[in-house]
Image 1 (cartoon, rainbow, N blue to C red):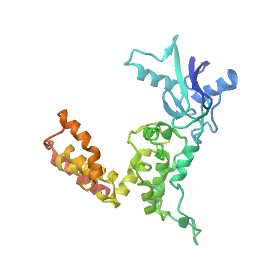
Image 2: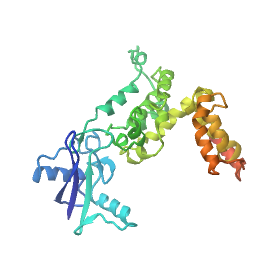
Image 3: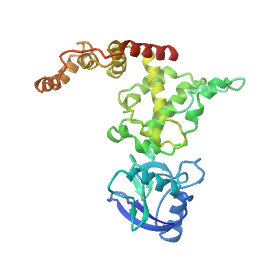
Amino acid sequence: MEVIFKIIRQKPNSKPSVQDYLVETEPGNTILDCLNKIKWEQDGTLAFRKNCRNTICGSCALRINGRSALACKENVGSEIEFLKSSYENTATTNTYEGKPVLTVAPLGNMPVIKDLIVDMNPFWDNLEAVAPYVSTAGRQVPEREFLQTPSERALLDQTGNCIMCGACYSECNAREVNQNFVGPHALAKAYRMVADSRDNNTENRLENYNEDSKGVWGCTRCYNCNSVCPMDVAPLDQITKIKQEILERKQKSDGRSIRHRKVLIDLVKNGGWIDERKFGLQVVGNQFQDLNGLLSIAPLGLRMLKRGKFPLKFEPSEGTQQVRSLIEAVKKEES
């Protein structure tokens, strides 16, 4: 079968361009197979990373048809089917002159070095920022080796599968708008350290991960990282676990991010859904203790009043008792 590959090519400090290649291939061939075929048979200047070809090293991560993935894992047939399902309810198609069209681009949130190769230094720097290794005291050589129970070791299995491919970082909406956010890859590794029974620096770690929007509170919970992770590490799930560890140690007065989570749960527990009047006052205004916070939302409140969008009363939802019971059951299970 013949497939058209639209490859986004770029040099540093220049605008990207699209170059088309017609490739004779089979549905079972991987995207990496096709890139190799292009480089070996059509254009030796095409630049991309590769290594193991077995979904182990993570080197060949790219954006394929708009989402980050491993070129050695995704094949031509599955990508064509993915595009068919994406276009089936639209007027546009993913073909040109009857031939399937696949688009390949470099990873996002990282500067391009050349073509499909990106500079991953920010990615590694943000990983280093969370100190992703057992604490110094924990690394001191004991008289006998560190022993862990099977249950303690099992806590590390999922995050230990991360191959540092950069797919989650590439798709991270929070990283795109907030350059201080360390990224889902770093926080997934961070939870590995929190869960590691050999580490003795948990409290300091949690304080570090609780830092403004740099740490876990910078996550927008868009689920993009979970959806593209080729190893099912589920970075968002690990970020949520860190949040839970922090919340168990903090009070509402310890910061707006903490209040946001705790107040939301309390209001839903009491009324079945959020009383918006109380939410802003309690989270931003900290129960009238944060005057600067109150002043910051005053213009919004006035505009809402003017346009009749400010709720003057609150009606609890039906089934409030059931919602309350569910929240209590979850908390009991977690404890």
